Image (cartoon, rainbow over all chains, first blue to last red; front, side, top):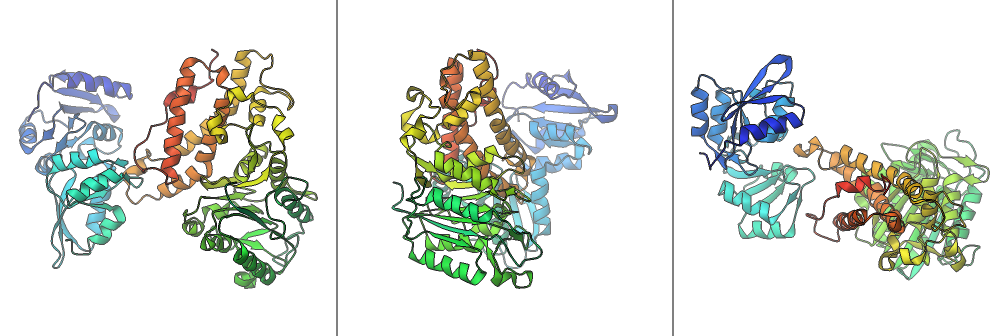
Length: 220
Length: 396
């Protein structure tokens, strides 16, 4: 759902891409076309909204001029898990401005682009012997089903360098209920005030190794 | 004084039964030089307690280890302990550096060598307030890459230093001794590594100064913490050499001021001159730039290669952060202090805008150091001001 005027986004995006050396032009009120390797044109739908939901993607997926990529340039924006799944099944790339840049610089088809962090998370979950399955509830919130008698857990993966109280509160606002924040940034640090907030919200803070270890255990 | 006592344990081995390693005739000179520079009552103004400091030459492993245990047993914990070794070093595993003694033998490496890890473990177990391990031997830099060593370095004390004659490979040696020890002891004796006005010589600054004087492969200085690491006093007359006018030196933070030698190097003046020479401002600025450029470049290279903004930030299993943290202690923190010292000493040559940049840089350096020495919260702090990269780049 749009939060307001998004007409500025295509022009902003085309200029921003040009600044990074990618030729791009506005083709419609919410579309940009970017040059890719081999002369191929990448068709991009632009958005600037807090939440990109399934409905936003379904209409575009059914459109005859289906895009290659949907970008949401809102820095605090996020995607529902169903929006991600619909885009994937329709073979449309979906992500933030950073993801779009990664996709356009990638040698793989931008429609199949997955950022490195997500790749690492999925690979670790796939290889973990206690993980039976997982559901991506939103872009960063996952429900992880576990083998045996171990109850499912809901976690949010954050890549912050400085995990501050503000970042914890923002994650709680954005993603609602979850049991733990898992830090995916190997350099990530947690401030004392962030620890205090997590404590008051009964949210655990797990470094990557701790998370993988705790998947073998029962959580309170 | 920052600690109540200072002690030196110096070991030199000019010959060893390990392999067919050559004799090192300069080792005896090396041990004498360090002893004279650091121990009280010598030609220098050393602070180490003469009656309790130890100097050993060409002894076997059993005796050296026994004397080391005995020495450590006797030291008080409110002390700076300096361990010094000159001789042959050998790697027996990945980064596992052994100090070779008179009877060292590859078939009995456990009992016949002195592992650097064991030395540091002993210092940590004793919980001395400050310690410095000075290694003037081949492969010495490998010790700083040893995860076991960095692991036992509990960082529960005020600070510690591992100074190595070479970052990798062999060291320079003459019959009069090794170059690193020569430069290190010169810095301690003359105080030329210290800022104007300083009363004591900090051995980490002396090692950094020595490092800067020597060619590749350069020595390696791995400093942690905020210990003073004072090993000698400075004669008042030494302070006068090439002095920077005190009005240019921020008195409250004298440790961060560059050595007067640094300033004079920048201005390319003889050691007896002062910065108030007749060189025009543009030429002086250009020389200061030449001095700070390698420091900025080294810091930037480390940040871009190992820092938290590389693509590895998306890999939670990346091992790059371990390298990043080590390089912060061994290179970036000492470089930052040196950089700030040079800039402070040359404030007069700065524009008003550059002085603003300097103050932002100072806040960044202070926050960064506090964060990485455990003094402040690990998160937050002022970022590096990008305009600092251009300080002294153009004429005013």
